[in-house]
Image (tube, each protein chain N blue to C red):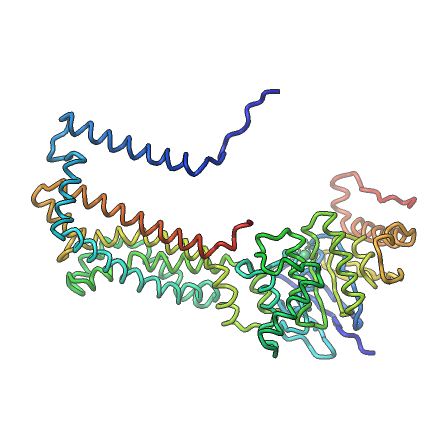
Length: 270
Length: 263
Ligand SMILES: Nc1ncnc2c1ncn2[C@@H]1O[C@H](COP(=O)(O)OP(=O)(O)OP(=O)(O)O)[C@@H](O)[C@H]1O
Ligand SMILES: [Mg+2]
């Protein structure tokens, strides 16, 4: 089967800064792929090129074999901050995404309600964003990006601004939703354990210029429950990914290391 | 350890707030009364609070105060509404489009620094001393400030909200009217409230120089007759009107932006 998303030789420059160089990556239909890498390696840039919010300097992105020309409703985006419209209630924010769908008022209400229920926000339909916690706001944003059934979901560190406990809740919620509803997800994160927990595949990027260094299939059983984090296999995967990133950042920044004179040695025994 | 608690910006009850505010006014009026009744200054320069009040009551009874106030309110309303309508149309476009911004923003920034007062003689030559000249001065004084503030409010809408609209497949017009404008509306409302305050200044400036009727006109006439009681009375009424308009705008804002409150 042809890949759902094909990233072909995508490069992006911002003036003198080479943000992305020669990115090739395919996402299979209904695959959950995480993108990890140090800050500034171009994860957000790549995501927004796929979303159609930015144009690549070179190369192209294909969705179902068609080149991406701009943003579209086939690709939903969840931003790092919830980006809710503060003058609309939770319900209103979800319904906002359904404008233009061929459905009546009643049906729109119903669909929005169902999606708020899906993210565990029944009873908060009439709350304004300012009244919701950060985690709840991100749930509304998730409901909003799911309700119009995009086939691809692009998520840029969606849980990055949340505290650790809330983040774990959200990881479980997202895994659960994805395991039942299946769609193609590209998930950007700094958190390797998060990536291992939710993904089918983790792609590691390196900075200056941003390129894909390696990819790792996460062959842990599904459905994934929090207990999996005590599985030795889970740690093995996380550790090897982490080692990979550290090695690259060492070999990638020799000048920085010689300047400080104190190379940050990764644990080579582990 | 008995470390004194930080009291910076500690909140106080609404009652004590009002009490303190009222206290300031009472002290000020008492000072005024003391100075005038003590005969420290001549009545001609500063009449007593009682005299000012009496004079104002007289003018209220004769209907002159009402006529002057309503004429001025009419002028400010029209001039301000025209300026505001234009700002609300043009400002968001300047905030959303770099082309429109390039077309107008440097120009308006330039005009904004030209003293409006200096235009009063010119506007009299252009359109005479009747109401249109008052509208023109109020418009000049408010529009160029307002439109830049509105544009700025729209520009400050987070880029991610605009991106949200784009990923939802919305067109530019829909993004402007359904996302950018409502998102900027609280800031815009603030700009409108502040500029309304300025509009009062421009109104009085225009009326002082040349007019038939209005608050500023009455003050100029009073000056001719050394009627300082009228001048002070009218200045106080002007202050009160400004305050009332401001409070009404604030109250409307509070009602409109209830969604910003976390509880
Ligand atoms: N609009 C822009 N103009 C200039 N440079 C940019 C722009 N956007 C990104 N960059 C540069 O491109 C590189 C990649 O940025 P990007 O935001 O994609 O990184 P990231 O991997 O998402 O980082 P983080 O993990 O901190 O979010 C960085 O060096 C950044 O400074
Ligand atoms: Mg980023």
